[in-house]
Amino acid sequence: MATTPEKSENIDQISVLRSLHKQLEKAGVVQEKVLQTLVSLQAKIGDALRSGSIDVAEGLDWKKQYDEAFATLEQFGLMTDSLPTMKQVQDAFSSEKMVAIASLKNPTLLLVPNVSFDALVGAIDQSGLVAIKTYVNEEKDVFGSIDRRTNKKPTAFQPAFVEGSREMDKPDDMRQTLGERIKNLKREKHIGGMDRDLYAMLQMTALRNKSPVDCETWTMLDGDKACKDDVVPGGGWYGGDGQVYFDGRYAGNSFDRARFRSSVGGDVPQS
Image (tube, rainbow, N blue to C red; front, side, top):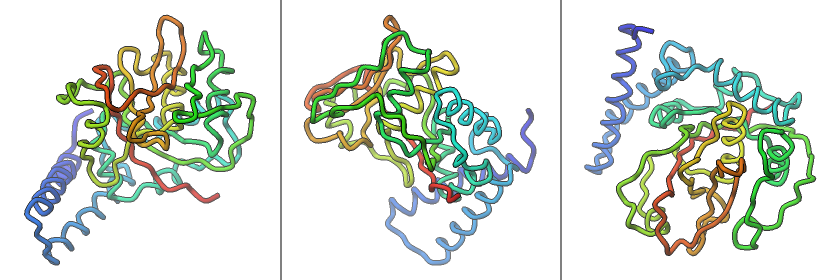
């Protein structure tokens, strides 16, 4: 689809906004008039994004994204009447977060139910889309013991966008230890890492589309509660076994298959 002059102008505004933010941060300059202009521009961009007059990122379609998230919940038995509407999901992201989403690689909408990680693992195992039950490192300092029989139904959903590419690009810091890579990682405002729930939902979405993520790589869950000074939790896909796995690695070691995925979380819509 051709880019209209209006879309092109708004996309240019996003680039200018990012550049101004970086320049102000680098120089340490805080000028009230400039900041007011930035706030106004952000608001306009947010309105344009929510109204659909421009895309958050190339290929992003709110209806398609929402329908995909809906279908994933349905496929894995996590659908309830508490599911937010598409309008509520859109409103869950501020204008600043909408701009942050534009920087993600292949932004993918997830609707994360407020159930335990145990329940998410159980949903994967019972889906019929995996050959072997999900491997989870249940050591106390990694993911801990889980109960796959948990079947609590969700009463709320957390919207989030994550980087949904099958394999993330190879970074330049491969010689560093996992701990060093996490410590040195700099993310823009409103952009976070991955945790176990986000990753489980991402793999569910990928499995439903018959294209599991991380067949050759391993996603560091640097936003997870198990990520500590000595342990880095992560997730991936064993293609030969047809199995999702969650394990942990020593933070003092390097691992050339390890990759970061970023996320932008929205507010939980009120029913």
